[in-house]
Length: 220
Image 1 (cartoon, rainbow, N blue to C red):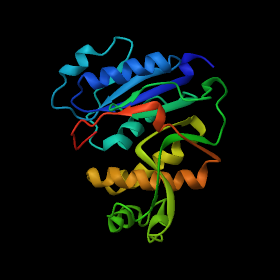
Image 2 (image 1 turned 180 degrees about the vertical axis):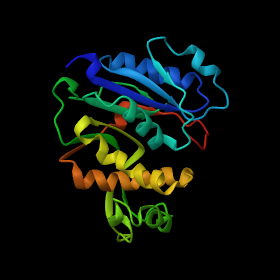
Image 3 (image 1 turned 30 degrees about the vertical axis):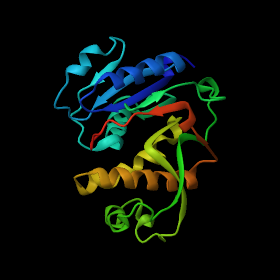
Image 4 (image 1 turned 90 degrees about the vertical axis):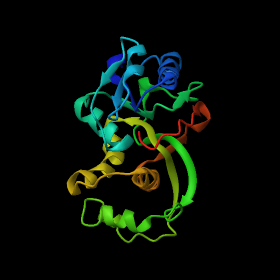
């Protein structure tokens, strides 16, 4: 497996030095990954001037939060073997223990974990409305007490075969032309956790290997 076979995608809006820290961390701890930054319709693009020249910037005018950024990147760069999708505020601080992207085990999802019930965090009616009559219709009317291992930040690492398991959450928003808000970002953390519980044989928490910076934004 060559560097071409691994891609890290970073979602950002109005980037600042934190994006540069995230890129530096990727280069230090995950040098085998190419890096693409997807802009979520920034008002201020000056921060992009400081991004290293070997990092691709996609001025996608993405308005669909982090999942929209992942879908945009995957649609354009769909021939990689292993993908890392992270928000710009997740700074790598060390390499994930035993992560071997040269021999990635199928059916494995690396994500940021928290335990909850599907109803925790509220807005369950909105979740039902989003997924009613879609390819994920089973989420419509799901038991509020369903326990999950959530995917915080909707950021994850997996191989190409399994990327769509998580990205399919975005299909309903595209089909129904739903304008997304922060609520939908919160919902994706829960629904992503549920899909991961159902579809992946191995789930690995990568929270200890990243530092989360609170940027005070309501959109990425």
